[in-house]
Image (tube, rainbow, N blue to C red):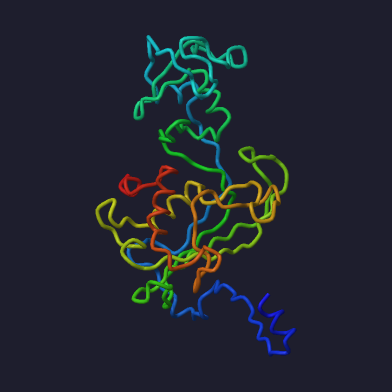
Length: 294
């Protein structure tokens, strides 16, 4: 509005363009790219999911629960029927050895559900041998995802991120090609797209970014991201929040910084809370410092 008034008054108007985000660092020669100290290798690849000969869904549910002889008169938050009555999945599922009135308590968190409801929830998921409590999100077993095949590279570059002028930078490069959806994806047999790959992401090479110290002070974020990649948790196939495109590769609730030299999009630095936030997101997927010790 000020520019319009100045123009009407015959005064000169200087229009400025909105600044553009700095997505990439200055050019880096191959000789300046170094392995990340304390981290084995520089590349991880994932292939098509191999179906393991595992226990039956009934065995998985039984593994993580304790039967409750006298359940409280409360709702089962899966089927919304009372725990003292039969599961809402009675007649829908008829597994051997699991009666619709049986109630179980999850071992770590203590939340109670019909066994039949837990079985229905497991059958509707990734069927990877793990369970996740629908109330508190506690994970039982090793959670894996549905990330398509691809490659993760990581190395050190001699440039600093905003807010970390005394540190070099860990660059992570994800590359996933287009392909065909598998049985674990939304539309098996249908092609999926992979937009914007390779995707470059950045971590500061400081204590929280790399070095090992007692949890929860400064765990190794890069190593945890590598574990999440190996478990196929970084990406999934779904609908893009940005473009609305379906059947495409999207991030899977573990946020990454893709803006190198600015923070105009909210995906860059400085961001003093980012490393703590990504650690919490990794923990929500069952990836923690304890994972590195297994």
